[in-house]
Structures are given as C-alpha cells and as structure tokens.
Image 1 (tube, rainbow, N blue to C red):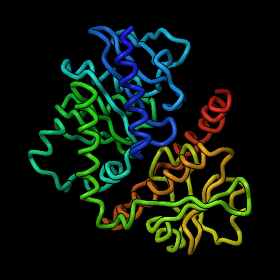
Image 2 (cartoon, helix red, strand yellow):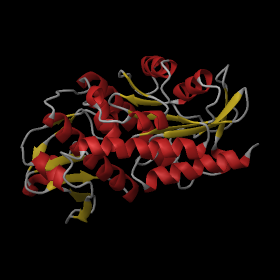
Image 3 (cartoon, rainbow, N blue to C red):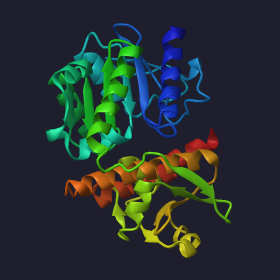
Image 4 (cartoon, helix red, strand yellow):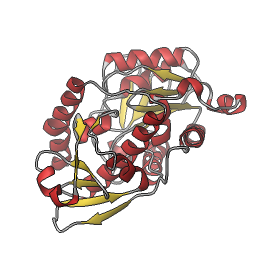
Length: 319
C-alpha cells in the first residue's frame, strides 16, 4: 500500500475545499497506483476526516475494488483518463465556479493564449450526462481521446489530468485563473457572508452577485447538477418577511433586497449551500449576460434531488 499516494489524495481534497474549488464531499481525486490499479476517494466521505485507509484501490481493467468503502461514483471518468493517457498519474474532478460558468457559456470564445492552452495540456468540452452515467463517461472519454488533459463537463464541473499531484493542481488553479478572467466582467464580488437569522435552522447568504440575481425577482431553473441535488429543479424568490414559509419545502430561496436564505441541519450543510448559492449566482449572471438560456431538464433535476435526499443525505447522517 502506497501511503504517500493516499496522503496526497487527501491533501488535495483539503486544498480544494480550502480554495472553494469543491463544496462538501463533491468532486473526487485519484492517483495511479501501478499499471493495473488506481487509488480514488470513497463515495460520500468528507476530505477533512478521511484517512489513508479510506482511499479505495480500483482495478483499471475490471473495475473491482478492495475496501469496505465504495469508490467515488465518478470512478469511470478517472479510469478513462488512465487508459487514454499512459503518462497521467493523478486526476482531479472539481466543481470550480468560473470554469463551470465557461463550460455553460463562452467556451467557444474563451480568451486563452496558446501558452496557457499548452500548460493545461489541451482543453475540451464534454456534453452533459448525469453524474456517474454512461453518457457522461462516454462524453468525457471522447474529449480525452481528442488529446485534452482538461475537460469541462457541461452542468457538472471539470476533470483535470496531470503527470503528478503538483502538475494536476497547477492546471486546476491555472484553469480557474483563466476562466475568472473571462467571467469577471459579470462577477461583481466573489466573496459572500453567512448570517444567522432568528430561526436556528435558517441563515442568510449575502453577496453582490446573489443579491443582483434576487432583485430580478425571477425563479431560477437549475443550471448545475450540484444545485439540482441539494436544492432541486428550481430556486424561488421571496422577501425577507416570508423566508420561514418559503423554506418549508426547500433548502434555499432567493430573497429580494437581501441575497439568499438557506435551511440546513448542521454547519457542514450551511457552508455547502452558501458556496453553491454563490456559484449559482455567478454562473446565472454570466449566462444571462451572454443571452445563453441553458438549464438542466426538470426531470433530470428531480431525479438527482430525489437520489440525494433518499440516499446521499441518509448516508451522510450515518457517517
């Protein structure tokens, strides 16, 4: 067992959290163990409490694993990266905000220099497929086979391949810097604050981007599958006096003149929802600026939300 590789995976997971490139347990990280196997983060276990023993060893050919933990549901795209690129030894899947925005709108006109593209190892776009689906795996595999070490996954996030941990993380950070440069014309301020309300289970999230979206007074159809999972297919708009009633059947609403209100059972969920609301606002403001109307289908959003409520959230409580 290569404990150094396992420790590197955990270290990267904590770096992604600290830098806001993932929320909660979303995203996943892997490292090639040898010619036949790779190590990957387990499904639904947070990076802060994760230990070396939690990391799962998966056979590249058979897909079988040896651990009490299930490997990440996105293991198939990691497998594809190791099969397509013999030189790749580390793979990171993030949900980073600005690259996600570019994946939804602006990829064809992305302002990127030839030198930046070379440093990324090529950048491609994969059409949407629901998390862990064959459709997603096939779309990402196609983008990898086209020679791209960085793949923007529509509605979903990014897959980044590197020769080692440092190479992969350098590409993750460079990608976000490039995409921020493209999106920042509409991103007013990527900082947000979280404030307690009179209700123990409700907090307010404030940022310029969220408030500008709320003040438009229109419900938002989900553009991001992590929003679909945790909130649902639509984010409604209310006013500050009605947030308790508005949150009876959902976990997040936009609040005119304020920002957003979120409902959760613990601090982990509050933080994840706050990150997602800011990401949602940046992405929505950007796509509206470009007059791009792109959403996830209501049926797919409902399926993801039902799966989250009935499986993932229960799994989290058990752990």
